[in-house]
Image (tube, rainbow, N blue to C red; front, side):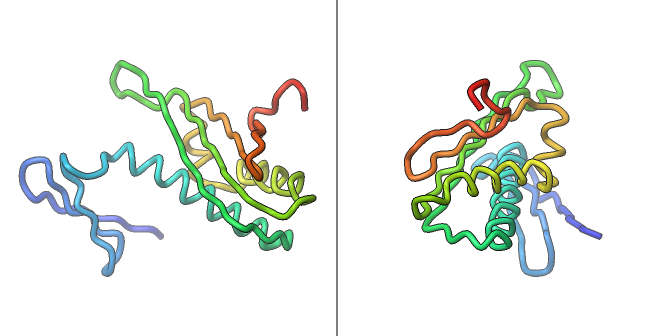
Length: 141
């Protein structure tokens, strides 16, 4: 069972405890809770991706990710649209395997599956600098 706890520190400050070793202060100067949701999406997606490519025996030279999101204007201001972008460098000839691995992330990433319940998620990747839309699949695929 996962457990996260919080202690109010006054004003808009909360100390959030993920376990005995990790304490995160959430206040008006730090990340907003919605930023942490997006960070969770990147962390989960990247972690699942790395597990998949390890099983596929694909060596990645570098990987970075970014996410942008739009929220509804009315409370509870859910995410309505999310763009998740992978930037990956691999040896030539592995591009199609990397795209397949990214598509599997949609199936196995818990946070991706939770967030797609309220938001349209578009996944794109730049493999060796060449752009490709992964999800939803483009008409050309």
